[in-house]
Image (cartoon, rainbow, N blue to C red):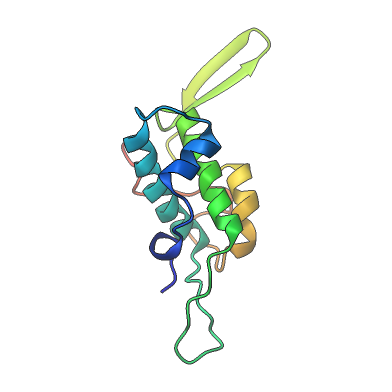
Length: 137
């Protein structure tokens, strides 16, 4: 099966750090974890095996570049909103931090991934993803 986690090797530590504009190495372990998590979240959200159904063997097809770009957006978004589940909103002089009970796919990530989503999941709408990766985070 041509899952994102198994076949998308374009998102590397160096590329993720460059995209997130991080120059030091103190966050390398966290970014490496987010690289793996981004592939798992992409697989869960997309529900697309990326195989050619027109062949007898179900040959793997290349993972589109938009999926890799969405993974980079996801990684940067998660780095900016640490700790997981804490959101920040500001209006003028007022600012608030709040937590949510579920992991959501940002509109920027969904913009890159929505055309490759094979079968929408019955238990989640297009903007929400509940994943065991983030339970208890």
